[in-house]
Image 1 (cartoon, rainbow, N blue to C red):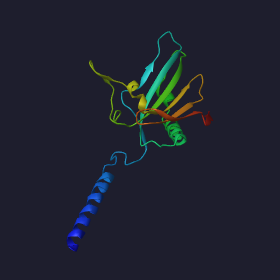
Image 2 (image 1 turned 90 degrees about the horizontal axis):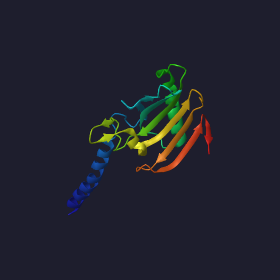
Image 3 (image 1 turned 120 degrees about the horizontal axis):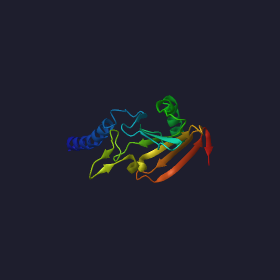
Length: 173
C-alpha cells in the first residue's frame, strides 16, 4: 500500500513540474526576453503638398519586451532615437521644414512582430488600426527641435492606465 501511494504522489508531483518546465521553454526565442526595437517595414510615411511649407515624416517601430516603468520606456525610446537619427534619413528641398513623429508599439496578438500593412480589396490592416498597442511616441520639428516624449501604460485592450509626458528631460504634469 505504501509503494502505491508513493507512486501516485510521484505522478502528481511530476504532473505539476513537467508543465511548469514546458512553460519556461515557450519564451520568445527570437528576443530571449531582451528588449529590442526595430522599424516596422513598409510603414514609413513622408508627405506634404507642393504648395505647403511643411513635410510630415512618420516612422513606426516595434518594441519587444518593453519596460513597464514609463520613465524607463521614455529613456529607451530617447536612446534609440539618438542612435537612429531620422533627421539624417529624410531630406527636403525648397526650404521646407519637417515635422517628425516616431511611434513605438508593443507586440501583441493583433500586432505580431512580423506584421505588415495590408491594403487588400476586402480587408485593410493599417497601423492606425493598432493604436491600442501604441506605447510611446516622440514629436519634434525643424522649427521646434525640442523633443516631446509620450509614454503609456495600457491594458491589453488598449485603455490608458497611466501616461507620462516629457519635454526633453522635463516631466510635464
